[in-house]
Image 1: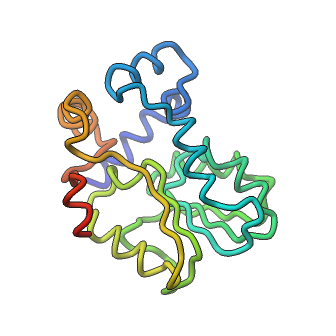
Image 2: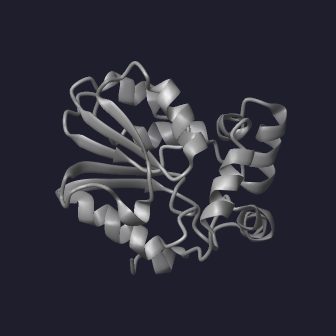
Length: 194
């Protein structure tokens, strides 16, 4: 499974940012057809608005991906300590390049199911578009909450099964087979049990 995930993100590293930010007509069409026109740019803005512009604590961004949505925000948080973690070496390399001028940010290649962090050490854990890729979602949630301080914030957005039939088909027929998404995928009701 690990090789399949690594290979999927390696193979898509040159189109990853374009698809997420919808810069080309192809990526806009793909999003319109299969993701109900969801605009990840707007979602990213909404998610990042949960983090104040004067945040000074410790934050974990997992998976960071290429930092296409987060690099400006992380670069502006000069008094914060930010750890960006991703399983994919290719994604981490791109994130490191984007965040090279931000000494308050460190990038690590690692597994969300075995976070190299101390218990209750993070004020915020952010996960944008990640949990649907994690092979062991229960372990990922457990680790996320292990490193989160009491009263800390867990901010996330990810694919939820059962919200759109065409999206469910795409995830099952293509994205899971390629390694970008990893079953099982919880429904809204199942998520409440995690």
